[in-house]
Image (cartoon, rainbow, N blue to C red):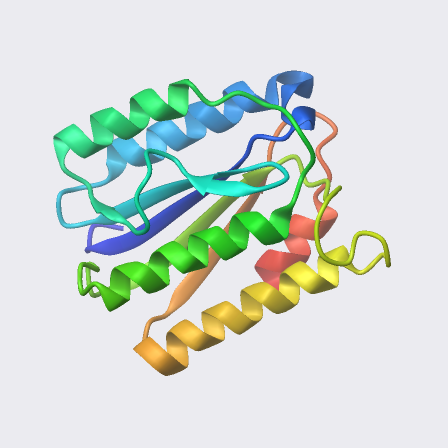
Length: 178
């Protein structure tokens, strides 16, 4: 969209992303998205495997200036795959960054978009041992988007992408539809 927005890219960097060139696809998609942002936008990139961190440091979203975009594109290019896949950690980190940006009053003041890129296979995190990982992640996303709506009057749209050959679309579709 052309209006100001807050965008968080959540990128799976678990070991399975090395299969079928998925990591390259994720890096290229993320770079393309960052390049489309304008100075009116705020953005962050969360990389997750067993744990999640914001790429480039910081606790919230940053303004999409030419310098910040260049710096993040360099950081995206250096992402490497390894470890298990914890969707819960990825989403939690993304929502924490959005919350912090709103509390710091450095948000775009418009809509929020979370773009979640993965191969679709949860292997670590809440509910994995009990077989309810998909439900746990969906509950987290619904809880956190609900909080953004009620506490901050912010509409949040979740976009999920299953990348690469033999990617599992089941969980990503469930999250997007819920």
